[in-house]
Length: 379
Image (tube, rainbow, N blue to C red; front, side):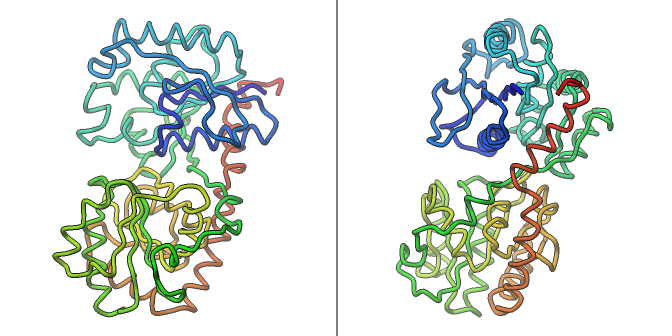
C-alpha cells in the first residue's frame, strides 16, 4: 500500500508531532508499505535509517500571520500538495496537526481517504493555540467530519474533540507509540560517568526543552525537599534552555545536586533513560508526552502529574505515581518513596516493561491502518 503522511513540520525540526510522523513512517515502511512524508520543511530525508521518502511544499508569505486556511494562502499550498499526491498516488493519507493539515486535506482534489491526528497546539484552548489565534473551530470540525477518522492520542484529546463537535463515531482512541527496540538495547553511555557521579548515585531524571508548561521550576523546588532527606540523590534535567533555572538552584543551595544539561541525542539519550532511578515529569500541561513513553520503554518508574497523556500512561501504584500538578509536597513524597524502596522500584520496572509493549510503534501503526480499511476494500 502507498501511504502519504502530511506533517507540516518535520525533521530536522524536532518536536512531538515531527517524531510521531517519523516513527509512523518507519513502522509502516517496516511493514512493507511505501511511505512518503509531505511537509513544509525539507524534501531531503535527514534520518539515516529512514524507511520513507519525503516531499516538500512551500507557504505563501503571510500565511502564519493571517491564517493557513484563508484565501489565497490555502489555494497556493493545496495546489502544491495536490501535485505531490498526484505524483505519488497514495491509497490514503495520514494527516498530522488537525490544523492546518485538516483544511489542506479537505480542499485537496481529488479527495483521497484520510485520517487526522491532533497533537496539541491545534486542539488546546490556550492562548498560544491555533484555535484561539485563528478562530478555526468550524474549519477544523468540517475537515474532521470529512475524514475517515480522527485519532485522539489521550483521553483529554478525546474530550476536546467532542467539545469541538466532532461526531463520536469519528473519534478513535489511539495513543502515540515508542520504539521499544531503541530504548531497550544496550548502549555505550554512562550518565553518571558523564556527570562525574559515583556508580551507585540515585538519579532523578527529567527530559524536555524549557517551556512554562514543563514546570521545571516546580520540579526543582520539589527536589530541594527531597535532597534534605536523600543526601545521595541527584536531579538531572536534560533539555535545551534548562539553564534558565540556574538562579533558582543557587537560591535553594542545591547547585551540587542538580545538573542542567542542554540535551542528549541518539544512544546517549537512551542511556540516560536506562540510568534513571526515577523518571520525573512535573508538567502542568501535555497532550501525550513522548518522554513518559520513552521512560516506560526503558523501564524507569515514574512520578508524573495528573495531566493529559501522563494520566493515561502511568498506572497509579503499579508503574509509578500520579500527583496533582503544582503539588510540590506530594511530588517530593512520592519521589522519596521510590528512592527509598528498591524492591518497589524493581516490581514497578517489570510492570512498566510489560505495559510498554502495548505502545510499540508497530502496534500503534497497525491500529491506525484498521481505521482506513473499510474505505479500501481491495486491501
